[in-house]
Length: 164
Image 1 (spheres, rainbow, N blue to C red):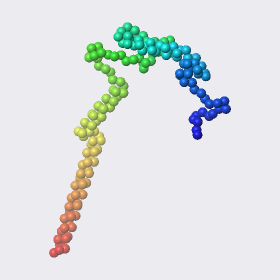
Image 2 (cartoon, helix red, strand yellow; image 1 turned 60 degrees about the horizontal axis):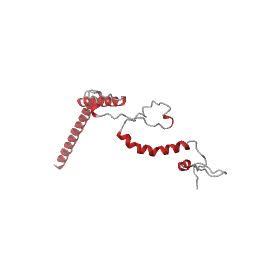
Image 3 (cartoon, helix red, strand yellow; image 1 turned 180 degrees about the vertical axis):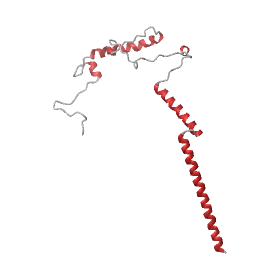
Image 4 (cartoon, rainbow, N blue to C red; image 1 turned 120 degrees about the horizontal axis):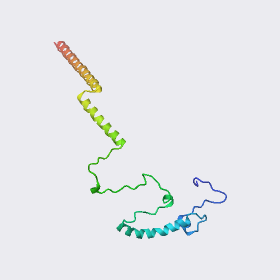
């Protein structure tokens, strides 16, 4: 039976510590962040009870940063939380600018609609060719129908002469 990616070693099997073992200190390999993790776990219940008071008063907008976030100032636009804009604060006169992709998509749709309108009117090169082809096909069909009728009439005339 396969054992996965790693082969067994003569020293024994691989052992992975669980977060509970690391916090409890019973891990075979102690981690350096064990103390920080324990402090973080102790602070979490305090924050949960403090959330209710934060909801009532928004005086404290600063949150405690984890890891290196408190040390390094990051200018990542994806990290910025979107502002909630209220309806009364919206500027009605301000028009939102479209992105490049949206603009290109609108231009593409308008060009297609304009082309289809010209196509219906027969003003485009392709429409002219199609109309010429259509008239040619109609003429050929009309000639073929006329020819069939003449042949049919000739056959009937021969039958009538043969009966007499």
